[in-house]
Image (cartoon, rainbow, N blue to C red; front, side, top):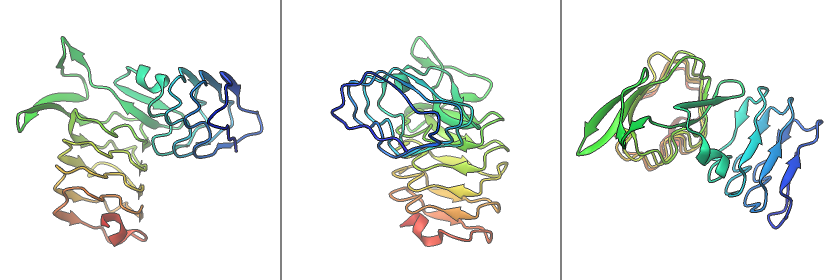
Length: 231
């Protein structure tokens, strides 16, 4: 566990080698922090761990990472600088999606097809193989209208699609999703229906809170969550 005071003036920090988990809010709003070195062996970065550490431009994310919490890297120079179409780190964690453009216009790629809906332009996506967890990748994303999950996806992490304003469809049919995190689809007003997969075992609180859901198929496999997912 690591925790740095918000008013710290430290610009570079190396996480000790014995640390396995960086706690929630650990470096949140540390405005002077520019570089963080995270050693191999760290498996988890907690919710909002680096949120709004606005000067943070360099952070080494080890291959041992298995979980990155809610908006942990959001509003940092590091996150803003990511331009890969699909930024995957650690153990198959999709942390950001960036649509490809030419001259400002969305362009077709192997996994994205430009579409129009209601006068707005966006893309229809099929996620590539190798993604195990969708970890905040589509939070506040205005460019994605539909997503087909790949067969490797087993988890939709907390706030993964939160405030994805124009998201209309998520296709779970080819995936093996067993967990949907807290507020995963929060405030997705255009999402009207969803068929949850038979692989789903657990759903976090408010998974579809403030969404536009009118119709839902809940699988018999669901053990925990249930109504709380739509509260």
